[in-house]
Image (spheres, one colour):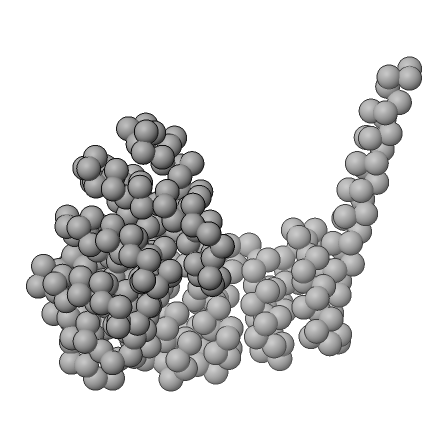
Length: 337
């Protein structure tokens, strides 16, 4: 009997905790659905909703109520059954007078998250049609999210419009770094002529994503290697260039190891070169001689004295972790490390 008591008490505690949890959810649901309460109170209650026990009808009513705020409506629609959610979301997006910028952009994102290619073709077509209309929306965030959704699904209309605007270098509908990134995700090799001009862009943020996207382009690679290895290039550009080159350039070890070894170079760049080199090693694209030289450089960094800056400290700590990883993952380097 004494042995059974702890288990019994534990079971009773679990039941009590579960009931408390359900009561908290019910109270939070009631607060959230009460349109007479301040938005701040309702949004705070939303954090405790979990999986509300109330039927979705109340949430659907709030989500489709134009008198509610965008933030409240989006949260409410998130608790609606997928089929009813899709119907409501597409209807809101298709009506230029329904929904503010935050709601419409959020619903585009939520549709992408909550739907799959398994949905009926008719529903896919409805989503595609309404999102294509929003490519020309006057609200920047809505346009951006529409392009993200459509290009992510390899939609030819969105891709062609974006590529044409970049090629003409005029009226690009979304921020340049985003536009370049989206075409990169679609497949940079399909958009080389559209992307090449941005490798020389004056904005480091644009030049950085262009360098990463064009690393597979033989015509651009020499320039990208120069950007990656030039201490006068902005760190952001160098780091992105190295990331792309690590995947695409067979000569990557010839300059990446030198960057890791160079104590005069920026710690952030050395760290990027070190991490990208390990990534390349993981795919078996590095010969033993280069692996050995790299391992020695990592060991040397790991044994350095107190770091001179935060970036230098991060470089050293990462090197220490890599020493252990390299020992386990690459037995041939045991004697070096």
